[in-house]
Length: 231
Ligand SMILES: Nc1ncnc2c1ncn2[C@@H]1O[C@H](COP(=O)(O)OP(=O)(O)O)[C@@H](O)[C@H]1O
Ligand SMILES: Nc1ccn([C@H]2C[C@H](O)[C@@H](COP(=O)(O)OP(=O)(O)O)O2)c(=O)n1
Image 1 (cartoon, helix red, strand yellow):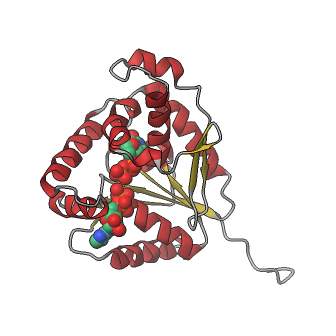
Image 2 (image 1 turned 90 degrees about the horizontal axis):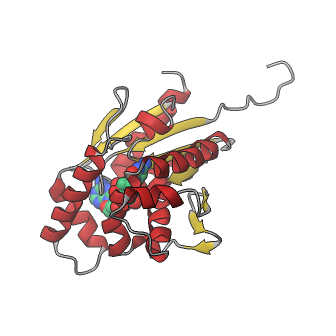
């Protein structure tokens, strides 16, 4: 180095995809916090636009009606992994986007190409503005949103493990019903025409069924560090 200044690390872009309950959010948040990166939960953005459509009485059985208003709500994501935020037209919707109603409708809304185009643009601009880099988690990050990501991870886990994790979160939820709902949502997300849930060819697949969350975090942190070291 000519003037003895520390080299500025190139921003690192990490894409983490996979079905529901595989540990994407918990892993991404912890990896980003540990490595000083930004964090983006893209599912929260699709939930936020769905919440807005439900609140405004849009007919969610009609993709044309959804497409016509896809550009209306202003969705803002805060990308600090220690305190991620999500607002719609200035309203904090972190709580309301997790209701059963939104969860049951989000696949229909997120299948509409105009919705995906809008949200994808937001995601790319947040990733481009992350000075130190970002961990972005979702369903189509490695395949469509950030195909040039430095590292792509695809998390999987058995439906039983995923349902047990999810029903642990939703107090008193029936594991069988949770399992059926997860399978149904994954099938809808995987079979839509526009950027379905899929593993990118160059993604590293990590089956988390038998791993603790700490083990998954350690695995991903190691993979990021190896990438940064040029291995
Ligand atoms: N490897 C793991 N072992 C056990 N529980 C886990 C593991 N990974 C995540 N969890 C738990 O499972 C639940 C769902 O994880 P989450 O990160 O929200 O998954 P996703 O974002 O893929 O839907 C959370 O309560 C989380 O703490
Ligand atoms: N990149 C993404 C992220 C989420 N979605 C859609 C499909 C998912 O069922 C919903 C909700 O995603 P979210 O990650 O919040 O779902 P879970 O945490 O797994 O319950 O959004 C998407 O289509 N593309």
